Amino acid sequence: MRTFVAAATSFIAISVAHAETVTIYAAAPGQEVLALEQYKPTFPGATMLNLDVGIGSAAFRDPAGAENTFYTVSDRGPNFTCGDLEDLMPVKKEDACPEVEGIKAGEGRIYPVPGYNVSIYQVALDPAAKTFTVTNAWPLKTPGGKPIVGLTNPLTIAKTDKPRDGAGQPLPQDINAIDAEGLVRLADGRFFIGEENATGIAEVSPEGVVVRRFVPAGTEGDFALADYPVSGSIPAIYAKRTSNRGIESLSVSDDGKFLYALVQNPLAVPDAKAYGKAINARLLKLEIGTGSDGTTLTPVAEYVYQLDDWNAFAALGATDAEKPSSLRISEMTALGHEHFLVDERTDQVAKFFEIALEGATDILGSKWDDEATSPSLEQTDDLASISIVPVTKTERLVASSLEGVVTRYPGKLEGMTLTADGKLMLINDNDFGIAGAATEILVVEGTEIGPR
Image (cartoon, rainbow, N blue to C red; front, side, top):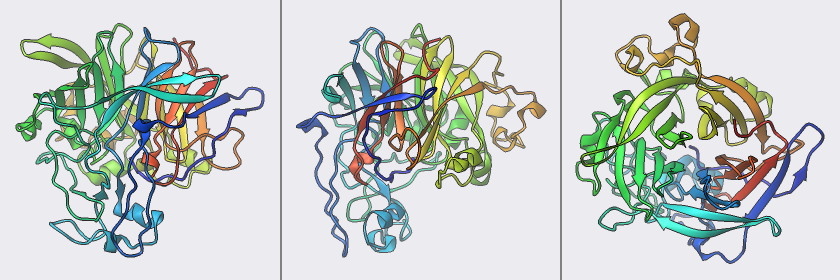
C-alpha cells in the first residue's frame, strides 16, 4: 500500500434519492491510546510532522458482540517511501535517503517510529455524539513477551526491502515483525490477521500473543529463528507476491470453520513485468483445524478474482489510476453463504463489489499453482480461453474522496464490516496522520449491501 494520501473533509452527508446516507464518527477527544510522538527529521530543510495512531487497516464485528462495538487493527506503524517524503516536506529524497548498506540513494521506506507496537483495538461508537472511543487494545507480542513491531522480515526466497529510520539510516530487519492488515475474530476469542509484507496469516490469542504464523510453503525456513512457530501452509506460489502486495484481506465463514484470504494484487508470476499488467488476483479458502502441535490451516480451494478496469477509476477522476497495478484489494467482509463484499481501490476512489464463489473454478493444486506454467495465470486476461470461471462481481458502491462528488468519503478506505443491523461500516487508514488525515468511522445506509 502507498502511505501518502491527502486528508479528506469530515462531514455528515445526506445525499439525493437512490444514493447512500453517510454518518461519520470522529475520535472522541483525549484518548491517550491514539497519541504518538512527533516526527522531527534531522536532515536540512525538513519540517516536523504530527503523528497519531492509525487504527483503520481492517475491521471486524463479532456477531455475538455489542451492537456498536468493533475490532480494528493498525498496520506496521508510520512509514513512507523516500519519494513520498518529497510530497510531505521540502527535501530531496536523495538527501533524506542517502546510499547506504546496499540501498540506493532515494530508495527505500522510512519508519520514523520503528518501535511502534502493532495492535488490535476494540472500538465503540457513540451514536448521539457521533464519536468513537477505543475501549480496549491488545499490543501484539511474542510468546516470550517481546513487542511485535512492523519492520520487514529478513527473507531469502520472497522479495523484501530494507527499512530506514527517521534519519534515513538503515534499520535491522526483525524476524518476528508483522505488517497486520486483514482481521477476523473467532467465537473462542482468537484472532487471525492477514500479513501483507512477507505475506501470510498470523494466529493471535485473545490476549494478543502471536501463537503461530502461516506462510507460503518453502519460505518457513526463513523464520527458523522466530519466537513463535511458523508453518508453510499456504501454496508456495504466494511467495511470488510483489513486495508489500501480499494478503491484505481476510474473512471467515458463517460457521467459523474456514478462512478466506485475498491477495492485494496479482502475483508477480513469472516476473514484475507480468505483475504490472495482470488483473487476476487469487482468493484462497483454508480450513481451520487442530493438529498435534496446535492450529492448522489447510487450503481447500482457490479462486480467481479479476480486478476492475483501471480506466473506470480514471474516468471517475482518480489521478492515481494509471495502470492495472494502480488498483489494490484492501478488504473483504462476509455477507453470508460465501458472498463477500470486496474493497477495490486507489488512494482516491474505492469501489465495493459483492462477489460470490458459487460457480467459480477451483484452481487449487492445478498447473496455475506452478510458477513454471507458461503463460501464467497472471499473464492470461481471457479466462474463458483457459476454461476458468472467476468469482462473480456486482458493483454495490463507489466511494470517492475527490471534490465535487455528491457524497464525499475519506481517502484510503481500508477497514470494512457490517453493523449489527446490517449497515455498512467503513474506516479509513489515515497513515498515522503523516499527511494530516484523521481516522474516521463511517456508517453507510441506503445501499444494496447487507447480509445474504
